[in-house]
Amino acid sequence: MSKVEFNMENLQKCICKTCPVQAESACAKEKKMKVQEMMPKMMESKMMPDPEMVPGLYCASGKASCGDLDYSKMCQCNECPLWKEYALPEGSPMGYYCRDGQAE
Ligand code: SF4
Ligand code: SF4
Image 1 (cartoon, protein in one colour):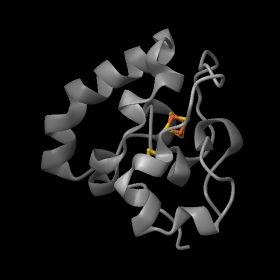
Image 2 (cartoon, protein in one colour):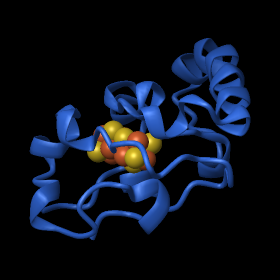
Image 3 (cartoon, protein in one colour):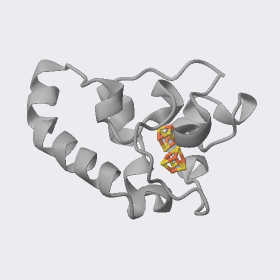
Image 4 (tube, helix red, strand yellow):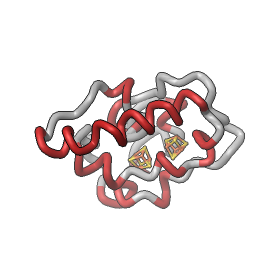
């Protein structure tokens, strides 16, 4: 596998935003709203926010900064386009990057 880049293109493909692990997290919801608000500016400037502000792309950035995620729910990473694109099953951990850290 190759290292996943923390960039806008990958953020748009990331499906963490619809993952049940984050669905009930007030912290992730708040971050999601902020990122949505910032999106037009981010697209224009091609600038990425700090990873701890982004509730996704954990395979690139590592563990979630929110402490209220529900890990009893199923990780969706194997449905994500980046799963195949970066051959993530060849690395570790196998999903749950928000809990276990970035893909290596
Ligand atoms: S593999 Fe998982 S963490 Fe990485 S971009 Fe896709 S959904 Fe997000
Ligand atoms: S890394 Fe997996 S478990 Fe964590 S939010 Fe993304 S899809 Fe869900």
